[in-house]
Image 1 (tube, rainbow, N blue to C red):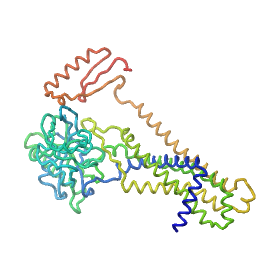
Image 2 (spheres, helix red, strand yellow; image 1 turned 180 degrees about the vertical axis):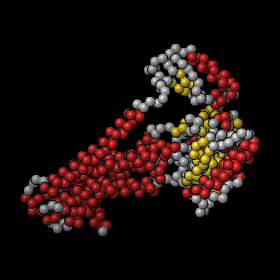
Image 3 (spheres, rainbow, N blue to C red; image 1 turned 30 degrees about the horizontal axis):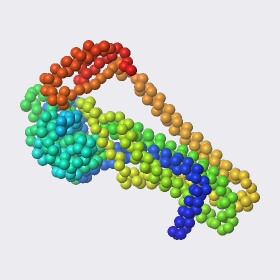
Image 4 (cartoon, helix red, strand yellow; image 1 turned 45 degrees about the horizontal axis):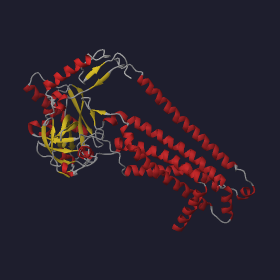
Length: 515
């Protein structure tokens, strides 16, 4: 068996050497089709299929607010009650909240995304640090892998360094493993800090930050049970706040949702678009297979006399099929390897081109979407290569086994069977191109219509920017003074029509569009 395989391999290499130009074109076409499929499926896998890299992610459930009024000072109270008296449906409950703070080290200051987590956060998720240890004291912090590499260059002597968050000193005690985003699938904080007791979530209602509550379900517990029991705790927290500061009533409802695949804003916004893109690149692969099939059929037609001689000297139809399969398989393997390499070489640019994420305060979040290949991506790539080899190898296989020895050795023109197969491939290619171009045209038309929608305000000639005076050491009072002075200076600038200070920052409207 191995002797036959080695013989087919040598025969395939000889065929490649005899027609190198067509072989290169086929490999390039397959590289294009397979790389596009690998890129899109990697995104689909990262956002829609992959589970969180934590212990037993299928048991995790997050409490989502279904609308109504949520008072900032109420949410920490609800977190405290859920953690101190977790409902029977949960084996453990943790809290996590976000803030953007000024991170300072060595004289440099940067806006940094920081999460405050409850002390049981890391134990409940079952995460272990890559370096150092997890924070246990209020003045200790742990860094994400990406932030550690970017800020400290991946140096292990970052452990024990003193850093400042909003002017408060913290000691770096550990670095989290690469790819760990907590309960998020596509974004993660730069720094995490644990806090406990009454100050478990001092997220600053004036900063607009609210914590999330999530837990691990007990064996046999359902999401419906977790929702109902959490609603009872919500009412208890409401009564507790009413006794402290009447009148106080929370008009809110909760729902426990599974976060086995992590919470994701990109998933909510682009899941349907990714599925459509996946269908589009599959159509592209079919078009590539039709093109490659036509090239392979032309090569088979050019080798009809050679094939007839092989049959005349005793080659079986099975041997001819095996040679065609070996040739198609080798082309698919080469195209798949190059396509996969191209896909992951282009992945950083693809992720960079994705739209920015913003939290509830409108601040950009660091995108931390990990699209490294796993067993699912490997199996998909192998399946795509095998499918492509079968599709573009079907026509030349049929043409090779259908060779009439007598007619082929006597004539030099193409056989009617080959002509019919060529016509079928051309028709299939035209049909697939029509479907793909029609979908692309509808998408372009939809995007055009969306851009022409009335946004409810005049966005022409408007320039906006934001500033964070506290990150430069200003107090709230001096920061407001700075904004007032800046507003006066902008008002006196030529070309500015009407400056204003919305909550997001300073907004100016120039008289004419800037170049």
